[in-house]
Length: 373
Image (cartoon, rainbow, N blue to C red; front, top):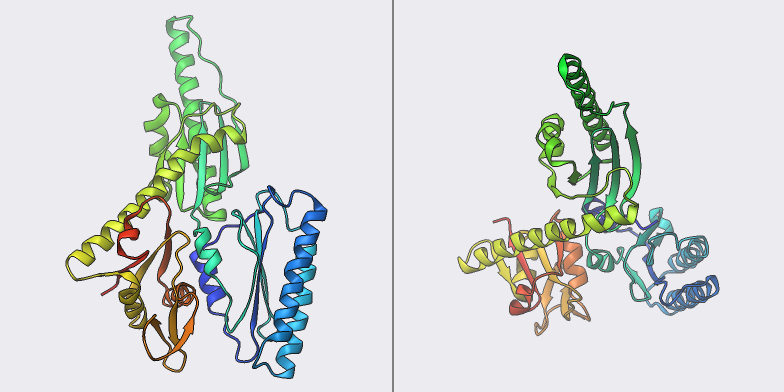
C-alpha cells in the first residue's frame, strides 16, 4: 500500500549520514500504465538493479569495505523489489540502503517516478519531496443511526470502522404517547451521535489526523458539532454530502476529493502570500535561487517553496557546508542544487512544499522561501 510521506519521515531519512560508506537510493517506476504485468515489473527491477550494481563498481573514491557494503546493499535492494511491492495504490517504490548505518527503508509512492540510482553520503530525498508531503485525513460520516470512518492520505482513503446503533424510527400517530416516544427517539439519536463522536476521537488518538471532513444531515450538524472533541473541530476542513449507509469507498473519495484539493490550494496560497509579503517588504521572504541558497546557508528558512519539477544547477562548498548558485568560482559544480537545498531545509526543520496549483513561483525563478527572521 502506498504510504504517506510526512515531514518527520523526511527528516529521519535526511539525518542519515554514515561516518563511513555511502547510501544507496533506488527509485523504481511501477506505473500500471507501463508495468501492469508481473513480467514487466520483473524486467524493470532487473534493469534498475543492474544499473545500481554498475554504479557501485564504477564509483570512485570508495574503500574496499565501502564497496563490499554497497554490493550487499544492492542485493538487499534487489530482494526487496522482487517481493510484492506493487500493492494497491503503489505507483513507484524508493529503497534506501546503507549497511554501515543499519538502514534499509522502503517507501511506496502514489505517483510515478523516473527510474534512478544515486550513491551519496545521505539518502536522496528530492523525489519524495516532489511527490508532496502528506497530511493524514479523517472522513467521518454519520446519520441518525449509523457512522463510518475513513483514514489515510487525501488520495488514498480507507474505511477503518463502522458503527450502527439501535435507533427507533419516528412515527406520526400523535397524542401524549407520540410525544413520549419522540423524546425517546431523540435521546437514542443523541446517544448515537455521542457514540460516533467518541469513536472518532478514540481513533484520532490511535491513528492521528491532520484534517477532518464530516458528512452529517443538516438538521443534526449543530448537535453533532457540539459533541465532537475540540481537537477534531480545530482540524475541520470542510463538509461533504454522501449517503452514509450506502456510499461506496469510491463515492466517499469522489466527494472528499474537491474539498481536499481546495484545502491544498488554500495552503499553497497562504504560503505564497506570506512569501510575497516578505519579499515585498524586504523582510521575511527570499525569491530566486541565489537568495534562497543564502537564506539556507544562514538557517533562516521556515518554508521552502518549490515549483513542481523545478531543477537548476549550482555549486557546493563541501568544506564550508555552503550551497551556492551557478556562476560562483568556489565550490564544486552539481547538476541540480535543488536536492541539497531540500536536504538542508529538512535538516533545519523547515517545511518543504511543492507548489502544484499556482504559478507565482514562475515569476521568481521557480523557488522561494518564507524566512524565520
